[in-house]
Amino acid sequence: MGSGKSRTGTTRRAVLVVGGVALLAGYWQDPARHPSTSATPTPASATPTPVPSGTVPGRTTPADATHPRPTTHPARHADPPKPPRRRRAPRRDEPGGIVYHVHDGRQGIALTIDDGPSPEYTPQVLRLLAKYKVTATFSMIGLEVAANPGLVREVAAAGHTIANHTWSHLDLAVLPPVTVADQVDRATGAIHAVTGREPALFRAPYGAWSPAVVEQCVRSGMTPLDWSVDPRDWSRPGVSSIVANIMRNTRTGSIILEHDGGGNRSQTIAALKIVLPRLLDAGYHFTTP
Image (cartoon, rainbow, N blue to C red):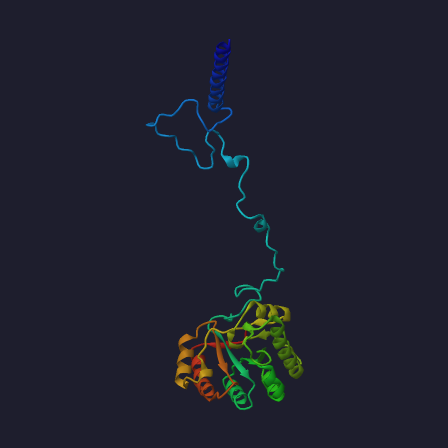
């Protein structure tokens, strides 16, 4: 009996062990429970089928189909704050844009005189212009206007145009809008106080323009005026150089830049004595922008 019970217990334990192994084997081979395994082993010599990127083996849809990855950090997804809307400054080819040429028919040109008025050189320029019946535009600095009001009135009485050239000839392109406005408005005030008229033209010192400068012209109702012929007379390169530069570069529509203030302008006066009659003899006529 004792030995019979022992054999029976041993047999039952063996059956339980074998059954447990069979159940475990069936569990791990069931694709429904473990899609990553196969009931049929793959031969070692077989080439495995490549798995597409982003796909879990045993599934027909990419892993990202139900749970897509964020492409950016959520905080970076928000739109940046928009800057305050500013009125766009007109371009040179639009009304109110910077003027580089005049339009007064065939061989129409303009002469501009900057940085005055000067008690020494402006009267000499005026005499030359009167002699050749040429009308010019004088771009005046507010400080000089305030210091020479009688000369300013003389220029206006002769029929020439007076343009705003700022209060103290600063480079406006590197200045904040509030300083730009002050430089422009103070010069306009000085010109109006002497002549009774506000200027309709503005010329930036050094030809240095910026959106703030052009926008100030728009607000002030002035046309921004530049030039197309620069003989660099301010650097005193010699009379012959000034003359050659003007005669070589002037053509229909040109705006010529000269100076009656800001230093010794004797070369400018001597050059004007030569180029004015030459330009007139060549068929050019002078106008104002």
